[in-house]
Image (cartoon, rainbow over all chains, first blue to last red; front, side, top):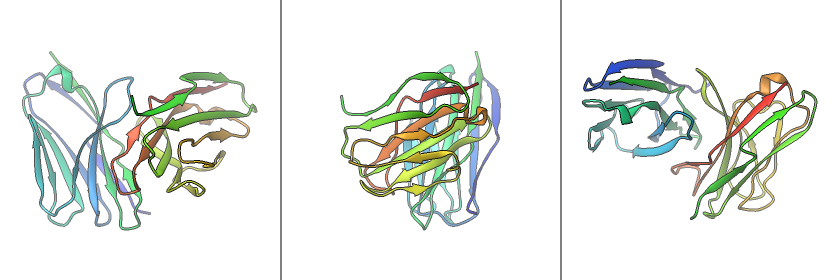
Length: 110
Length: 112
């Protein structure tokens, strides 16, 4: 079946270092969404990418959607302790189903 | 404040018991979803509803049932709970199936 793979599963960084998580789909996606879940919390929507090659920025976060609309990445510049949490990508398939990746859990050491 | 609520917050349940997790949204969203979250497995879709009166099976539907009698409510029922159903359950809603999903605070369920 259709899958959305996300790597790495977890990442430990020193505060101030950069962080990237990658999302890959087995099929072309209509859009991709990114969510953040703080420890003990629930997933919260961050951003949606729709166009091939689209790049969006939110302060220190940069989101990219691949040219083939099958992969995406989230890059955080100069991580802070407030960035701690799990980041999920979620791809919308042609069948109008949203498939979540397994998430990347980010640990930031002060 | 508009949003999505879930009840109970947490529950410990004996195996074999029946349990209904409640989910209510006041955003008049058409689509609603139930996910379970287990460590290392991310969010797995149990059941969904594209609009009131319709439901569909997700990735892991066995042992669970849902109903969507109206727009606001989407209860999830475990007919006879088993320990493997120990998990955190999230309800979510979106205006349409293609839109951003808004998640409830979750229900932590332990089946002994």
